[in-house]
Length: 115
Length: 111
Image 1 (tube, rainbow over the protein chains, first blue to last red):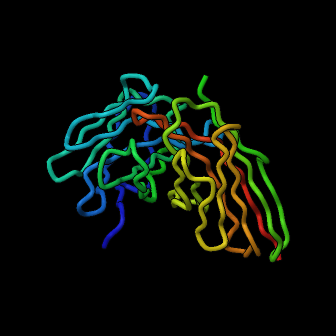
Image 2 (cartoon, each protein chain N blue to C red):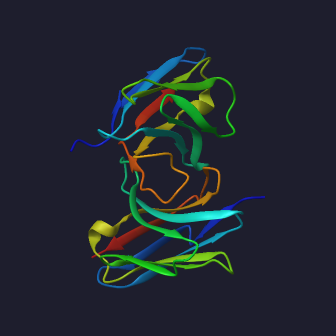
């Protein structure tokens, strides 16, 4: 079974631009969560989608948004990029909503650099 | 304030030796605690998941313990290998799907 895939793997943007990242979960998984990872802050939860609905959201500004499609694939969008948005963006999928003790499987991440 | 703190921040050990990583949390209400291993440039991989009623859980040479009363967890690595060099992240989940992450312990195993 294929793992979680994320595209693109690397991205370079300039301040003020917007970016869209894509995540394809493991087949059959309906929950997709997004995380931001930086050296200083570690992993931080962005949001979780389950059956095309946002179930939970972390403490990030409205510039960060996402959506999930009927095939469970998810996209994350960041508008008006700032230098501080440079990070590794990780996507994780699980069979159902991640509130219980279900295992989450992470993708390799998208490395975003904002110049 | 809900927080997860890990110690030490970094650790260097000789191949074949054992080591223990610590995770203290103040997250409440508690749902479960997870340990992840993250190799450089890769996404985290789950090692163990423990709920409130579980005191210990093993995954090969990795053994995690949980003391829900003191809100402490440890990850013990036995007979370390070079491939254990990675960042180990403790994640505590609240009921209601909120996750809190530690900043990780960077482990380096040297020959």
